[in-house]
Length: 409
Ligand SMILES: *Cc1c(COP(=O)(O)O)cnc(C)c1O
Ligand SMILES: [Zn+2]
Image 1: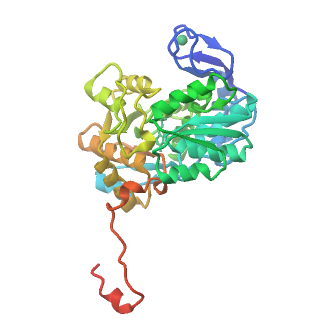
Image 2: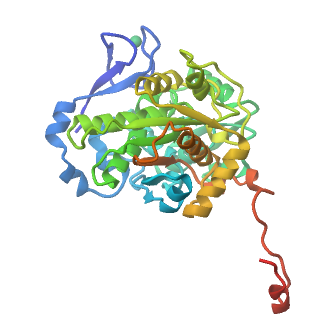
Image 3: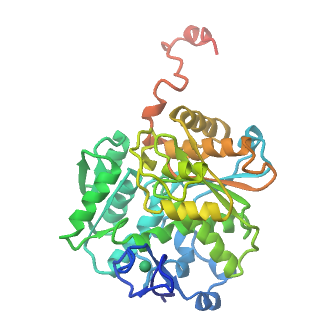
């Protein structure tokens, strides 16, 4: 059933073509590879009606995902809620606001469940029995959970200073978790070296070409949930920059397949000030980004040398959008604002998305009159440390009515 004909280099022109395998950079220019889809054939085989009749998970768009056989991992992943956020819209002063809440994704409560579902389905097709990743936290949770149910061995590499909850939510699955004294960029380099001598499938390294495509399902779902309409504006937080570029790609694909009208969708970036190589490049009009040493509470976004940073910069510049950054204090404020207005407890990354969206609305980069979708990528139960001392404590009393009556609320 595959509609992928080959892999092609994104940077060479004319595009080099490669057979479908665990290959992620071009032999000629080291540029990233992407699956090449036969869109004419997809157009003949896939219709809105066909999609609508399928089960509500990310695989309802399987023709646009890079697997050759039926999916085997993550059959309950995706189709997370798109929430009309009227209370928050009022506070921000925008007309139509939506929250795409991947903080309740299955199985591990972040958008990473999508990319790992694709990568591990592909890993099984390619015959790997051991998989792994270099992670800022959520990817570790997801690879551990998905590899457990998929009966795959896994090696999961994380920076040793991750949030306690994220380490716990990885270790519970009984896989091999390796905590490295170093930041994500150092962990990632180590994993590349490990792969030199092991025949393993690392989801965000040698399987990255396939893995990254899973992010497109966020965009497909938003369009379907809006009643087969593309939104005008989207704000998305960035680590490597992959999610942002793939959501944009998903909109283009649905437009080109004739599923939706082209409304000139724009996507805007969001980063934490303590790790904002992409936003800094956009704000200063630099041609490319300068790698940084991360120092932020938004640990899931702490990639100082982003693999898709240049793609993200070129994309945002090409569509004349923008990218912002917020301080740690602003992140916590935004986490509280989302919880208090919409009842959604997001992790620090979601605070980055909302905090940056608020700034770009206030500064006039994002119109108050056009549809706006915020991508909330992770769950607040995993990053509680920054909230300690920053939120209202409970009233603590003895079990006496008198004590209750004495509360000044
Ligand atoms: C990984 C991650 C991101 C960003 O992903 P990239 O595709 O690397 O930009 C955003 N939010 C959360 C919660 C994440 O874990
Ligand atoms: Zn190339």
